[in-house]
Length: 261
Image (cartoon, rainbow, N blue to C red; front, side, top):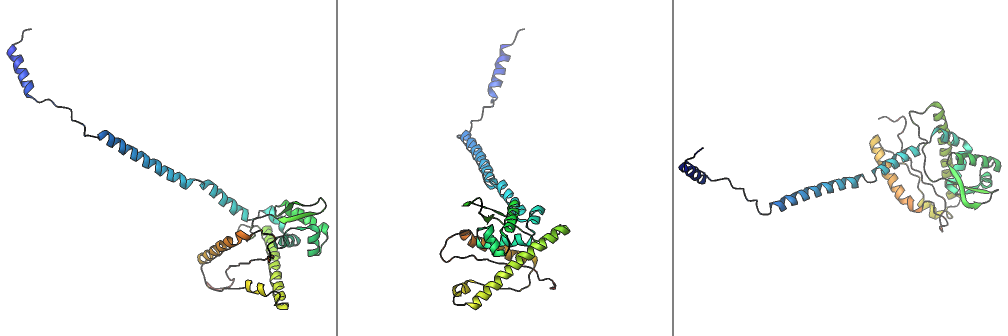
């Protein structure tokens, strides 16, 4: 097949006259800019993830501790039955206020035989209220102390009749013990005011009457308990401090039954 040289020349001229698209030069530093932007984005994402992990760090432990604390406050049916005996409540109260004692020492204080107090101590230990003092005493004369912690015997709407009765007994015994201590200190201060003068200034028996909603009363209770926890923690379980003696702090906050809303 023959071709006309002139046609080829015209095609070349036409082609030469039509500008061909040229590749656009990349802006200076575009690669660096993209790399910096990607790095910044990734870094920000990693930081956000790290912050989230920091916030979550220990969350499981805190939740677990809160649940265990809440569950640990309320006595289970078995522990409640183990405590619901007037003499056991009295023994537990004496160990709380006077510190470690033997079965014989407790027997003298409560007017019972050492065999009786020894039996009730074993029952309290079985349910986790008391324990033997390590490194003190002998096989025949063991020393006992309370197990650190707290528990609650507050009424619960879900309680069955037997549980309500057991709680009533325990609460009545604890309240009786509190009232006995208050009357005893009032008599002592009245009979020998000079001897107890320094304790008169440190003692208070106060009642505040007001009107409040459940939410307002709860806020007061939480605030007071926080202050008590802060002040008590450094001196809890201290021993052999000059001038120190057993003390109790009672704090009651409750609605008056029969009062109109």
